[in-house]
Length: 198
Image: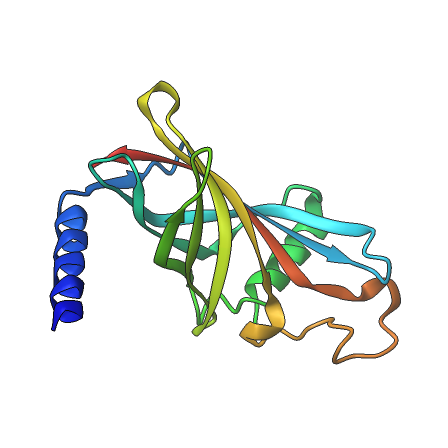
């Protein structure tokens, strides 16, 4: 009975804390999401670029701690920063096509936090669901929070295995003899988000 009462009190306290949380929208012009994919047997080559942010939100409670975070990325709007001309167009058509992210069928990818743990020095451990091509997998990563010029800034990175989302093209685990055309299964996503109050 005492345990049940204690759990009820804790739940009520958490709900009250969340109720006092302020909602912040990510400013798209001040924020960015970037990707990196490696290629070749030695993984010495790579391609880099960005993904447009469609919508993103962060909740910050009365104590200044982050309690929720979410982002929706526009997979039709993927950019590349290391190529130009026809090579760049070919790569982007490939990335948005059915071999990779199939943006026509799956125009959005998203992350939604399930739990956020405050660490030292304004760092947070975010655990949540990453959804790509209609498939959802749990991920965990570290983000650094700061408040320059009274703006809420969240910076960090995470990795995902594209095979978890059914993206097998060019994978050495499914295709033999690819040589320098092999594409690494792990994709790195870096983010630099600036949140402003609604």
